Image (cartoon, rainbow, N blue to C red; front, side, top):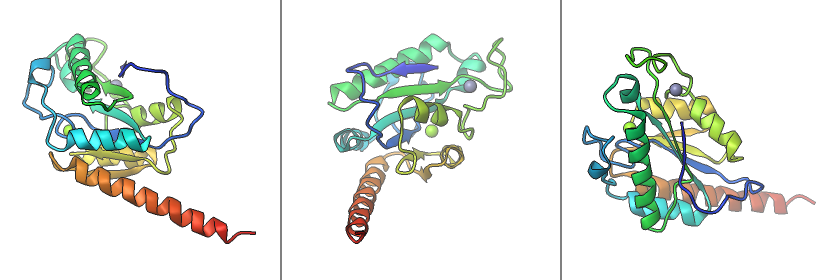
Amino acid sequence: MVQGGGGAPPDLALRAPAFFLDRDNTLVRDSGYVHQPRYLELLPGVEPALLRMYRAGWRTLVVSNQAGVARGHFALADAYAFNEALAFEVERIGAAIDEIRFCPHHIDGRIQGLRKECNSRKPGPGMLLEMARDWNIDMGRSVMIGDQATDVQAGVAAGVRGILVQPGELDRIVCRVLSEDLQRKSYLKEVNRGIH
Ligand SMILES: [Mg+2]
Ligand SMILES: [Zn+2]
């Protein structure tokens, strides 16, 4: 299930790193109604974090489990509508989500066709691997951030660093990831200067 944030087509020749981000309780507050756009609420620190990623030239790719669809709690259309509202809200603050993907499947689901085991359901790496290919992501520099162990596991399974975040702590972590990346880049520059 794929949704774009709209905007100009990306320059995919440029190999950029990505922040793979969980949605519920990482970007938005999980009120129990995260399929109704009117309950959309960005968590504290999300706004500066998303602006930071955007300005640093990293991709912002959201990967979400939405087993509520398979369970019949809400419809696919509701999941799409909520994601659209999220993408719109993020554009309104001057940042961007490049893409939102979600897995609507669950092995115990009751909706025909969605009741199945799926490699894209986190901790499976399916969504991350697909996006890595579609967006030409530099996985060596990328991270997966989420509030659940399964988010971290999905990242590790996809070959990136997984980082656990408490709701409201995203900006602190994004700051740290970006500054570590800058330090590593300048270190590599120093090392390469020694080669002749
Ligand atoms: Mg979550
Ligand atoms: Zn799935």
